[in-house]
Amino acid sequence: MAKNMTVYLKIWRQPGPDQPGRMVDYTLQDVSPDMSFLEMLDVLNTQLIARGDEPVEFDSDCREGICGSCGMVINGIAHGPLKGVATCQLHMRSFDDGATIVIEPWRARSFPVIKDLVVDRSAFDRIIISGGYVTVKTGQAPDAHAIPVPRPDQEKAMDAAACIGCGACVAACPNASAALFTAAKISHLAYLPQGRVEARERALAMVRQMDAEGFGNCSNHGECEAVCPKEISISTIAKMRREYLKAVVLNPE
Image (cartoon, rainbow, N blue to C red; front, side, top):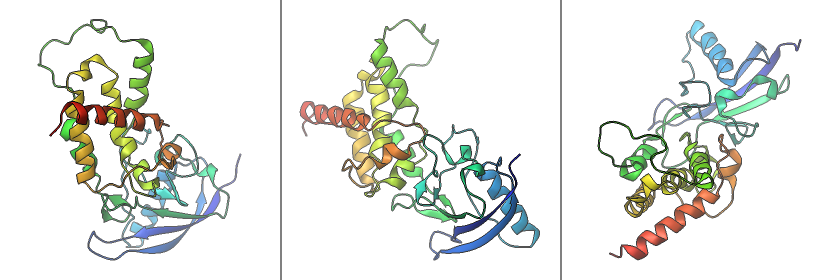
């Protein structure tokens, strides 16, 4: 059985969006290697509250790698050192006893810090609202096999739809680009017949909203793909660009 650990934490503390922040050092002893990273922060917060200090604010919800709310930069890597997992799926056994762990929020102009490790990612919501949906009439759902979809298109659509909107792609990109997120949301509908009806309007609206939110341009560094917890391919960005180009050509303004 692995022995418990001592870890040295350097955590970004910022009281509010308009207040300065700084790194604060904490020492946490008797950490089980089987704890998840968020459980470790829960233990730290329990100790901080017990001695009358402010707990560290961080986002979490499902803690199963599904919701995407738990994102933070750990030792300079979005979601931490393991590939293909969100922060909540990272366990302390990924770190050595006596390790120094630096924990920061997503850093992007379009993701302003709310407090400590919590950032405002509502820019993603506005991109979705601008066109990331299929307009259908309410009523009885059609049979699953009513509209045949070729297997390759099914797989590409499902791969893109795996995006959980965590924002790691933005945090890792040197340009703070949201291209991978936006491309995943455009692509998964563009591969399906149900999404083709509004494909041009969707591509135009979502790309323009992405730009309006202040995200940077994609320059193919590939950092977004490297840190994506769902390992979404940057090929979706190529798909988004094709959809956008077709929309501009066929809908000149």
